[in-house]
Length: 314
Image 1 (cartoon, rainbow, N blue to C red):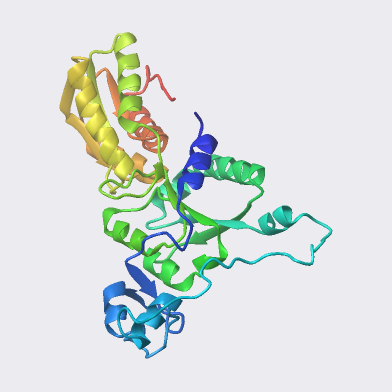
Image 2 (cartoon, rainbow, N blue to C red):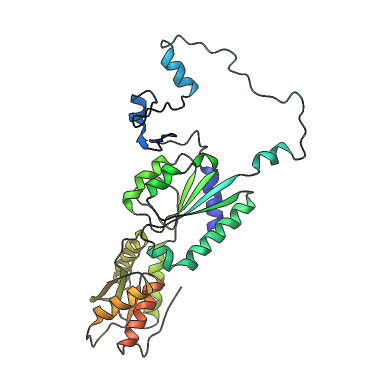
């Protein structure tokens, strides 16, 4: 099953905007983001600027009528087309036109998105191809400021859904998902301890496959090269690494654990500094991603340790 198939199933399973639960309310006037109980306590008047927000019909009835006194008439009436209206396009096709899905390419530090442009571009291509098959338009946004600011300044009601490239999402941002009242899915981050749908590689299984391959190549001792900036994917890969070397009974040489900058230049400089004057190295290293690996390889070669380096990339 590929990414496109997963997204298609997730999109169909999502509730309609009016059904989606939300605990946050955005003021249309001052754009403040507030907890819904705070707004309800003020009878849907913004406590920040005094703006009167829209009330649902049922809520207005409850405000002005005594409890149990309201009687609804003709509740079964539905709209019809008595004139048999004819258009150049079918009604079904007309209502599916101009439907947009917002895709957010989010930068927090910019490190992971900037250094893995090819990977991100592949994700965006897959998303766009699938949306085209569903007669949906992709609207790409790049946001380099706070995620909260993006949500407060963006009118989500004009979109059918939103796809969040969540490579750089961190746990303190997860509660903001509650304010998204349209269908959404996070890509490249599992966002643990949340109820959001996500599409992400199986980090731990892939790490096991990589280390098992190293063992089959005859390597017995192994070192670890990880990123020194928080990433949910890095956390899962480190966990998978520790579990895999234990299962495969490889010798994890812990003094050869290097936590370095996840940029090409940063990984090279940090690795060069941390290697020092070491004379012995493990048989192989596992690196959290290609950027770390390439920077480390350059440093190892410069230290004269790279004569017999073999690179294994998935």
